[in-house]
Length: 508
Image (cartoon, rainbow, N blue to C red):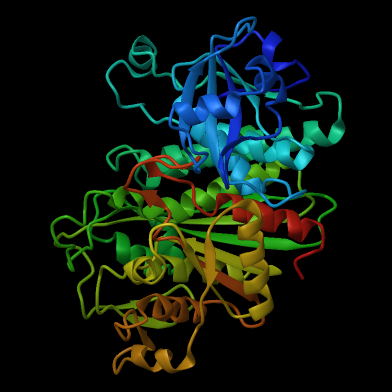
């Protein structure tokens, strides 16, 4: 991962390959942002005019390169757009800084070292810039010919080192902010790697092995239930979904505990390592990216490890419900009835509504430990994408205050989310003449129906929320800000923030 340092050096004297500055969109043209004063002075105070001549406007994510002025030890200045200039005396928001740093880091692929002379007023800004740079520099090329060696020869290796100019290396708050960013971003990027891995390499058993390796590295407890243990335990949902696959399912429990913890947060992640739709086969054109259907489990995995690395005073348990959903002679059929781990029976009307089945078993397993709260994360429904688009995840909960707190946490860390209802009238559509409940209900409001289904498997009296990340989990368009094409690691930062708030006693 990209190395990150806090530096008191002035931009002209920094030995680097590039100096990154910010430029905002003002009412009369581009405006040089704070942090770049020394660079502007070197251009005789006319840097904004030079940038405008080169076509720069200051629009968000816009990148403009120009030769460094005489006397600089760096040959290049890179100006990155921050968007609209804040009102007088207002500072740039954390998300603005993250996106600018991310866009700059991505544009500097192939560069060894860059000094970021972007707005940096306090430790929080340092943390935001660090996150943006570390996430924006991400690249996944494990499967390219010759791997990293080939990439290096082509000059497109990720930016190797970032120096945050204006940082305070001896200040505890600054150091803590950058160290937190490094831990969270490294785990988030690991989640991205998992999401991007092809399904012939990432299947339930291999995912479980990766979790076991991380648990050993970071002092976590891990328990893996294989197909025999799942059968003995009566995990009918996970077994039913995985019945058609050659790769058998797994349920992984990762536990981080702290001696001073007063609260227990349980996280449950959907881990369908490949989703063909099963017997209810997906139509052509909808299978190619279904390796990403384990993004919820990747997010939970990353969040638990990050909590451990940060030493948070909270107990966090992660449940990874892992299976492949494949069609075969042994696959679950529409019309079959599964007996879930909770004892309830489910009539399967559509085998492509499989995520809720594995989640139901994991939610009940988590509920039996009676945590203070459960948050599940899943690429659950295309309906949520229709409702909220490709960059926003939906939040449903059995407690309105908890739903609001999660929404605030997501906004704080820069993840787009929106609170969604659980309308009681939609529950009747899942009534089954054969079983306790069907896995399908009304088509309209399908994302909400899925949330209502999951609620049936949460223990009585337990605060619960469901995050449907179907939209933002996998970016099929071009990269933007600090978000790459492919796996994004959606919800990781929200989950980590929830763990921090829980540890601080600020989440109920």
